[in-house]
Image (cartoon, rainbow, N blue to C red; front, side, top):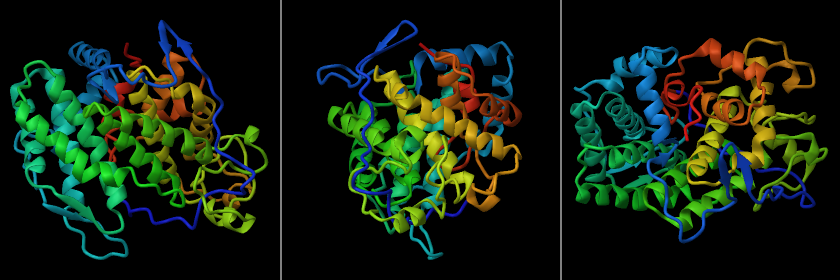
Length: 406
């Protein structure tokens, strides 16, 4: 497992900058009219956390037809440790995730069990084999019967990674025909998400590195949809609109990056510290580019997850950030594939360690909006099928490669 990210010094620059996103009202994309918000009396669409029914149906058809890259992606998922019928969950009552190398309790087990539940849910969706539904339910029921709280400094990030994956798994199993998840166990799982995860992932942390805020919002919006919670859903939309423009830079923002509400960075020196000594800004640069590409990848994936879940609910967050996503995807993909960075970028040295983080964003830009993202497209093709980072990104070539859904 990769090291857990630490706190940042603080967020972005000066008070005269704000993280306002241009209001886009409604947007017509394909045959769908997308709103800026979900009406308070509207019902949530299920399944609708990261994947919808049309996408799951496409996965099933592509695998059954032996088409690539979906068949290889499916086989990798099936043959992983997470796909085994013998997978045994290890639930904890208290999950304790500290900084500084101090002993952790339950952190790896929780993340892996959530990925296993999601893997088994996808396997059931593809194959219809009841053993997979039973295994997914077994894992989720084991945790909802035991977990009570998360503690220590990384509780927010831990609940973000695990909570986002739990919500995806639970959403599929709850609404899959024949999965047979009893109503009382569903209700218990709802309570688990509401009490042991939601308070952590809705904390306001404007001075942390942006991957925290985005991963936490990923979990928050998934939990909101699963729990049919309009208030939490709206709060996740607001948080996305506050953070994403402050994380992925565009030159139209001005000479320096935007700042989200609540930031305490108010001097050039603090800005330089927060952006990891970067002082020159170009389209697509991210707040953590000069830290390493791994954390930028986390943020790209989380941003796309949030926007994808909102999309399935009829809210077009993508339309507000598509130019930022496109710029950031191509900016980092070109250097991830080996292009030498210029001297102005991170002192001419970048850490090329991006994970399997491209598919969801690339699918929307290319297959729904017909936008060209050449470097990211090439990188995705070279690294398919994308597997799992063992944190919160799993099997996204299978679910989202060339799969726009409804």
